[in-house]
Length: 171
Image 1: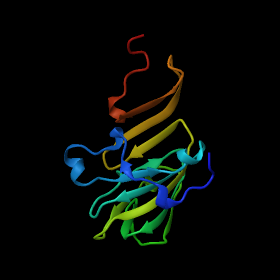
Image 2: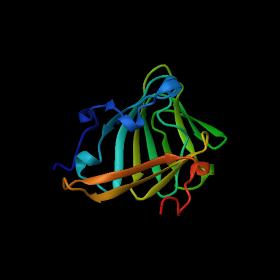
Image 3: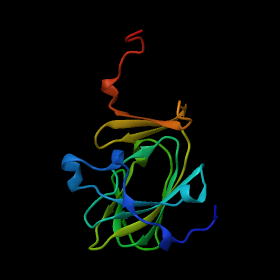
């Protein structure tokens, strides 16, 4: 595996089905993503190119309990939301989003007329808990042991705290 990739070689593709916005959210969210880290053989560091169309957000506002994220704006203009604060974004800006509670929840919005393109870089620590404060949801993610097919699985659950099942339910 070659340890170098040029950004011109990174093809942008629709997000995985789990991350494709549906219903009313499709009016506000959209992005195409080009994988980098996996193509370079990295397993403890994530990196991709994300491209967000004008007027859209790539992802809901969220914060990570375990993983830090870093973004580098490659092209376009936008806005970073962190909690109640807003910061204008332009080419060359570097954005730090450390792991933490809801006060670290962040979201990037394309406020320009063209694509907003950025590098998204993160640690890859699992299991991970992600909060979505706007919708009072949380997500839990982690890898599963290898299955009968010899491939590791992936565990993902999104819910709300009020929907919890009792520990002893069904035992």
